[in-house]
Length: 320
View 1 (cartoon, helix red, strand yellow):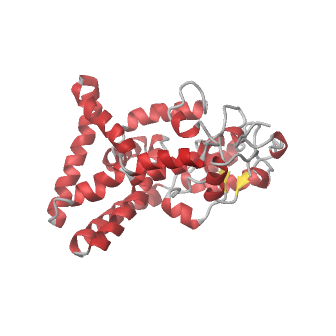
View 2 (cartoon, one colour):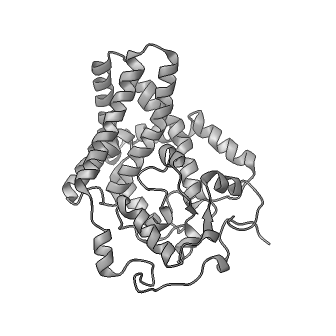
View 3 (spheres, one colour):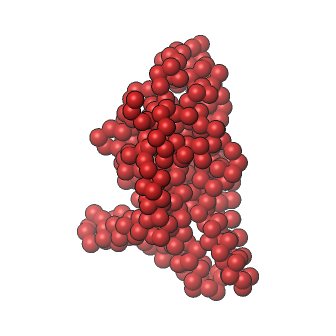
C-alpha cells in the first residue's frame, strides 16, 4: 500500500448535508450570517496589542544590557512575525474589519508591509490556493508536496530556513523588483516602511542595531522555520480533492502551539478551508459545528503538531 498522509475513506464519513450544514459544509444562510460577524473593536485591540509587544521586546533588548535578554528578544520575534502573518491573512480575506477601506489600510500599512508582504499579490495567489488546493495555481506547493519524507530531508529544509538561505531568496526578489517600473510600485512602499521602522526604532531606543537584529534577521531566519512547520501542519502530504478533509489536516489545538506558530485560531485550519468567509474569532465555534455533524472525526485528527510532523517524516500509512 502506498505511503500517504491522506485519511482513508472510512475515516471521512459522508454526513452532509444536515439541518445546520449545507452539502459543501457551510452553515445554513442564517447561521452563516451570524457566524460571519466581524469583531471590529476586538480586532483593533489585537493589532494595537501586537505592536505593543513589539515595542516591549525592543525596549527590553536595548535597555537591559545583557546578551541573554537580546537572545530572548530575538527568539520572541519569531512568534511575533507569525502574528503579523496571520493578521495579514485575515486582512487579505477582508475579515479583519467590516469596513473594507479600513481593512485594507490597516492590513497593508500596519501589518503586511512591516512584515515584508505585498498584500495585493498575496491576496490574489492565496485566493487561488482556496479555489483549488493543489491545483495548477497553488502558490505554496513547495511547502506541501513530498510528504511523507525522510527525516533528513525535513532537517535539511529547516536548516536552510534557520540559517537564512530561504529568507535571502525572498529578500533578493524584493530588492530585484525595484529594477522595473511595475516591481517598484510593489517593492518601494515595503522597503520604505522598513526604512521608517529602522529610523523609529533607532530614535526610540538609541540602538542602531535593534532593527537589523530584532526585525530583519528574525524574518530572514526563524520565521521561515515556523512558517514551514505550520504549512506542513496545514496541507503537507495532502492532495487535490473536493473533500477538504483530503486537502487539509486537522490538528488538536494546545496553548504551546498556539503561542509559537498557530495564533489567532489559525490552527482550526480545516474549518477555515471549508468556509473561508468565517472570521478567525469564530473558527472554533464553526469547528464545533463540523465535529457535531460528524464531518470532523477523531480518525482524521492528529493529537498534536509533533504527531503530525512525525507522520510527515515516517513510512507510516494513513493519517494517525
